[in-house]
Length: 315
View 1 (cartoon, helix red, strand yellow):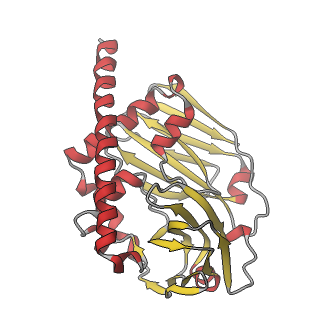
View 2: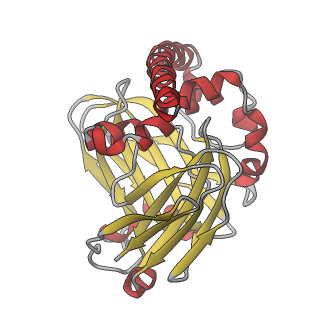
View 3: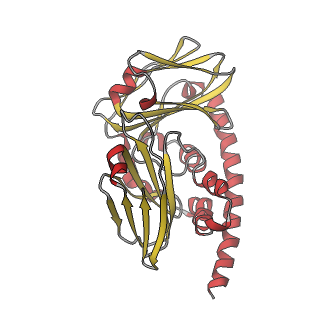
């Protein structure tokens, strides 16, 4: 009976995978057209917020391009824009807004990661930080971690000309995440149904494939650890003390439609999550703390103590 259930689950997962790929292609094309028509949207910071999600196309775009929601960061996107030689970011605004931040440059419209600026890897004493780029079209994604009360997205210059000015952001901009699960419906469940299954069958699949599907736009300078949780299965995570000392650790739990159920920042050597009611999957984002000169090399091991407990050790 168990094998029959798994067979049908794999069939449904394959259908979900195809549905996701087709939908992502269609919605991606529509979004490119939307930005081409609404050029003003491309030339100003788009902050992920409740107001943004009220636009008809935005939630489907996010659920196909970056579906593992980062509830811990304030997120801004910019572009697409044309670059001939370089792009520059106002460091003062970014450093005054968050203890840790990362700006990622993506190619457009393929959204492949080209390069990034990480706050703990650059000389932050100057006013501007510039990156040389080949001539082409790009977009920019900015994440503020451990933000401060006064939040300002930075000015950006392209080829030494101001493209966008500093943009203030309300401190409660991320409150919408608490109600996001209410957006769950058959459409988003169908899109992401296959993710739980490929995590479940992870040892039989190429790891680069699993990572690419689970983290289509994973940020550099971040270690990602993830797995599935069966319904009524608790989770226990144990960290080496030096990881707690040197890293910021952000935990997210998602339902099977990839909407956030639970999240927190972990600062103790042991974290326990009660068993969820439904099948779900989790994601740990581990980032070096500011002023840490080198990144730790992390090893982790997932153990099933029994059917009711999944135990994860990170050292």
